[in-house]
Length: 242
Image (cartoon, rainbow, N blue to C red; front, side, top):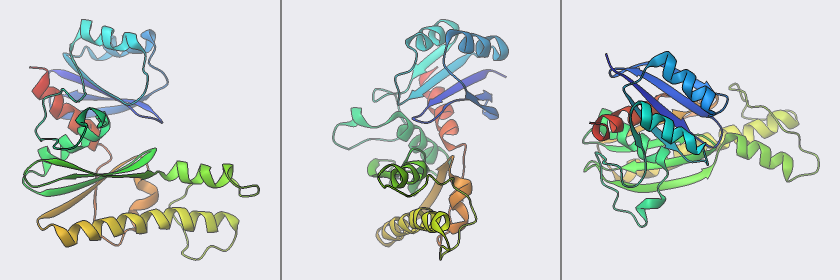
């Protein structure tokens, strides 16, 4: 089966998923995007296709190397998509948001989909039943909120997140965790309730690296898929790397 490498370079981590045909074999977190690292990936997996979603200033040689060794596509506003983007300035839509929207349309067609991505920021991405990405919202992510409390106060510590958080904090650390983690869950539940009140045939998907800290705290039933962006990248690659 042909191998596809799906690169996802976000604000926090550089990752690549390896697909055998349409099956996700493994996901790898990269330490860097140097020529040596990319050459090793190409030697190890011998990919036929590749796709890059990047929201950072990555190594410019990365695209050159992938283009020389594979059928390569860089995800941007000119990419052929399975949905429309009837929003102002579509060129400003992040590549990561395009990828998760593509996954939502591919796996949940004909539904009003709200995809919530938990990364450096929380992004709310709404794709209606007519497969139009209408936008959504952006708010600070988990690590950003915890750092902000530490950096913008004189005495509050930098707290590491945990999944088991009390409603009523009993010391400084648990007060911060209750306010931040449970506050995020309540924020997201509130958005979900507002969308549900407006749209029927409604579906919510949660993705991103902070799922383990938040999944247990939602009131609403949410399907969690940490690999959603990779699946979206693969679907986009299949359309654009023919």
